[in-house]
Image 1 (cartoon, helix red, strand yellow):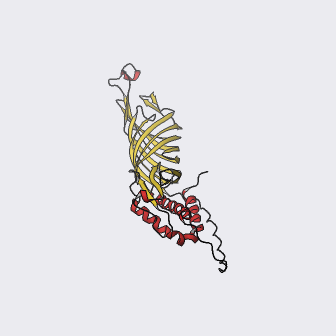
Image 2 (tube, rainbow, N blue to C red):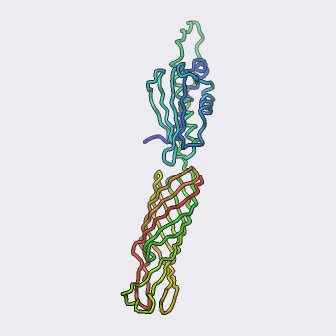
Image 3 (cartoon, one colour):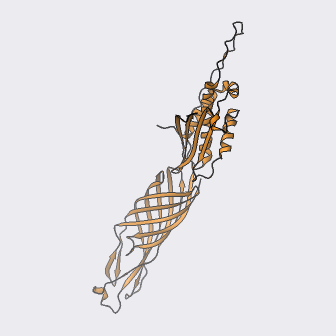
Length: 338
């Protein structure tokens, strides 16, 4: 199973501590390295090339970088790019002739660049430290009368890697919807929602209302024998509760709905406006596109099994009934807080 971001940090710390006893010698014999650091245009909060080089030098205690690639013993190509809702960094080491000596990739579930940048600078610093002994010239043998060297301190045990903590994610938004099944026709409407969770799980509460949808009897129906064609309008107001699980940009939810169906007769003997309680449960699939880390667009489609079927009577005749399955789709805009 691939290591998480924090596990890589802990291993890098352990490697740095193991070679720290040679830091002074290597500072004088440090390898000459040319750094090629690139950041994807979609990422705006990463350190610059100068800041990355300074962060690596601060961890080593000396500056191993040279401006002229021809004078470099090694070349390291590093970059940062967005990967889904998280970040990904890559490192490739090359020799003076441009031949590849190996690659490494780091990944962070965080949508911010600061965490992946720390891991990237740490990994490069450790690899430079490990390459320093290859640059050191052979040392002369110690004279026979030299005093006995003091025993080297034992290397500290690597720190136990802690499990990454998932950060809380709050979303608040609104959008437009289209629904069929609770009203005679496809009804447009508005939706407002809020959710709380993390990158993997969330709980959403929403409310929605549809515009009135009209039904009129056909000319050849019995109800149309009156002077005017009778009909009715229907609209819905409801709340929904949706626990969701997320993977990258996709999400899958269970949905519970409770609401009110309001009907008003038109062209009938006695005009009435009854309301009825409706409820149902079903599933939802959704996609989240983050335009920027704090703002995104949410597209979802859902299907609900209606647990409370309803019929509409006009002049004591049944003319319409709700569908057994209610279908809906919506497009929302959301503010994202982490």
